[in-house]
Image (cartoon, rainbow, N blue to C red):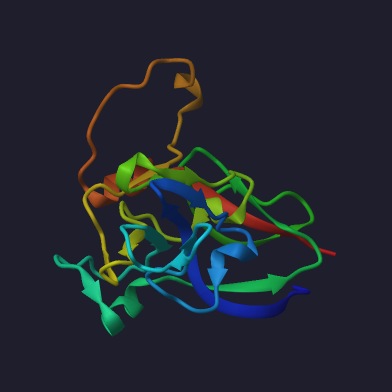
Length: 207
């Protein structure tokens, strides 16, 4: 495929400091930190720099591990943090979204890297968050789940799937209904939630 692995790491979604969010594009190298920490940054003023001394937060892409009832500490955090790999390629990977149950095909001359579900944006504590460009490979997650990321708090050194974490997904749209008002509803069954999410394909231009 003409790619070279550069490093492996942990998938950082975004950071929150002074109640302001700084989002990472999951399709870019900056989202893949080689070392994990519940609080991977400090803040500085004219006099000094401070670390883990207030309620700043970090948010990480999570794994498919079962969601616990209580916060996680120390080594038990490890199995809940998604891994990532950064590769050098001859052409960029691009996400294609079908807004349908069917996975979209790659254009002629392109090869599929993976298929998934169309991840749009995320929101955590304090109504802060961010989103993914729909052209970025970071907008196509292999697995659909209502809590695709986990919040870590620097002051406590813990991580947890809090109730105020929200994920937003591109949905399926019937072409015959695209200019008709959507009907409100609540989807609780996991399989129905997955069925409502748009499918996507991350493609790579072949030489």
